[in-house]
Image 1 (tube, rainbow, N blue to C red):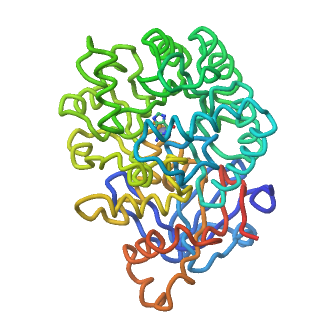
Image 2 (spheres, rainbow, N blue to C red):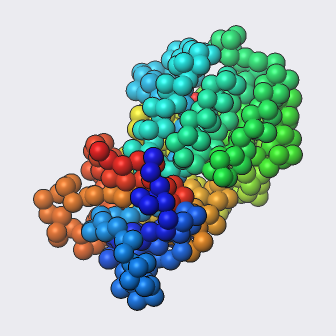
Amino acid sequence: MSTNSTGGSALYRGRIVNPKIDGSCEDLRNGCLAVGADGSITDVGRWEDIKRKLSAAETSRTVDFGSQLLLPGFIDLHLHFPQLDCRGMYADNLLTWLAKHIYPVEARFSDPNLARKTAKRLLHELARFGTTTAVIFSSVHSEATDILFEEAARRGVRAVIGKVLMDEGQNVPKTLLQDWRVGMEESVALCRKWHGASDGRLYYAFSPRFAITCSERLMREAGAAAKASGAYVQTHVSETVEEVRLVRERFPHRRNYVDVYDSAGLLGERTILAHGIHFEDEEYEMVASSKASVVYCPSSNLFLKSGTMNLKKMRQNRIPVGLGSDIGAGPHLSLLSVMRDGIYMQPQWVKPQEMLAMATIRGAAALGLDKQIGSFERGKDADFILIDPSTLSGRWREIEADLNDVLSLIIFRGGERERIVTKVFVKGREVYRES
Ligand code: GUN
Ligand code: ZN
């Protein structure tokens, strides 16, 4: 991977689209992103204005991308590393799908060779689709998780990764269940090694899979270890009706599904909850007061027919919501496709600008990293991508006048298109270029 061509500071010209937390986007045609040698953003604005402030020597380091879109890198808040190759496998509900397709494939990740090959491919694919930060469930295997961290460090991307914790549960192969002490020992060791590593680009997430496959003891230990280390917690919650029913049966002494996690000390501002589709009113309030974030995974929810996230209630309760591909239940790694499905799924239109904000600045806020990534501001890290939408429509010259039309075009026509993302940078360093 090369640095920003010369390894020093650089200026990138293009059409800068800068998402805001309120769901709007600033549109800077003929814009400029100035990046320092340390990979941070030193300025952002109109090219004419920035040029005026700089010497001829400084402006000589300009890379001009014409009318290509310069966007913050996408942030995928939820996906499963070992499920890269089980996307699109039929089963008519989540629990059958897990038992039939997912657990057997995850068991194979005891093989470090498979883990290495898959990790390289996953990280390449994520970069190719413009994802610069990914929050990833590994398998239960400590070695496979270590390998995924190594490859993420080598590739130069930003990632939150955790080894799956499971110590109980029907239909889970014995080889995937670990005594809580062993699972926690391995998780703590990985956290010590990787949380904050690679110049602060890598983070650890304690990862109890969901309440159906974890004992209360394991969940309590995971919550305590996350608090002690400042690491993240990731888990699944309230994804399907059947799962909610089983959790109620398993934990009759708890008020609801969210209370199972809350009483175990798993909820806090560094907690990432995937799905949250079938919440009762009280559960929205509990999640909101815990400051945990929720991940909208529309492609996965469509695939497994899990139900539809109530985005309106999430908003009303001020719960931070970002986007997740949730591969393998979600068939697409491209967050453009996930944005498309996210719009299709809601009963009312969600504006393309708001969807982009969910895939960037709101994802950053969900991780508590919105001072560092997710949009373009002086002092933030330069995680950005270039997208060339001009080949997506013969009417491009007319379409380009309106930002919502442009974003709509890339969301509805760009996701499955090869080579639409032309370049990807993390902290100012190029991690992918279309060849
Ligand atoms: N709930 C528990 N494990 C999983 C998983 O691997 N995928 C999805 N979609 N839901 C889950
Ligand atoms: Zn998942």
